[in-house]
Image (cartoon, rainbow, N blue to C red; front, side, top):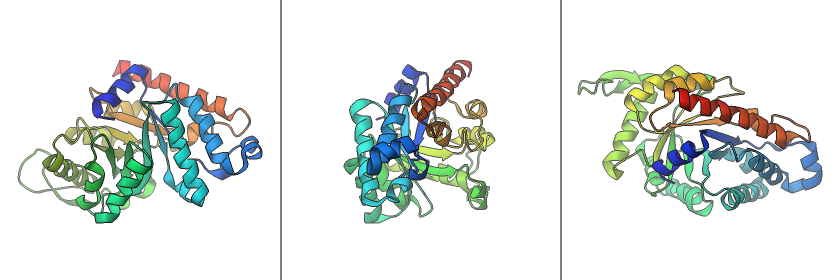
Length: 291
């Protein structure tokens, strides 16, 4: 899926909602466990997907929840992706894996997620440099989503450290900038030098709990899509995210995980998820019109 196709999908639905499939076996409703046993993760995901597909443009399984279950978890993850592809074509599917290795290892990770498992995008940790990003970006039609300014409390321990980087005014004189700015600028520059237009294969993660950073980032990253976690259970405000982060092509995928998929722990879990997703999508539609 390319930039235009993703934007067209957002425009046709009036939504930029990404539903995070952080499927924790301990939180799956008892009614699903009793009926489905060892396939409970898959059954839960199918019910959530069916309930939220009218309102979402993307799904984001967090790989850790599936890895933790061994072979069964990986199988259920693969079947989840296959279910989305077969029943809701055109959905954007993100592997929230936060990979960040180099060389042949990075290339194997890219093959695993893009070719073997058929994801559109993978989240990436950039701290080993451009070598850890490049293998994910050389496959046309697929995306690397690079961690920049994340939503967790301890992000400031590293991501806001001051480093030497290019001037915010585009001058050649070196200046001090936050690490996340240096990552965004250098990654865009590196990708465009090798592949040309970077908007079609590169996104950045910017947390909703720091919406003021979105306006700053838009000054040097005006056209790229941003994946924004942290709305809902983590306390981020959709209104503030939109105010600071929207661009002329929307440019946002706002993720909600726990606030949607665990909206209820009872037999009405799917209906509750649908309600939570619909409410967020309706707010997004109004927001797109307003901004």
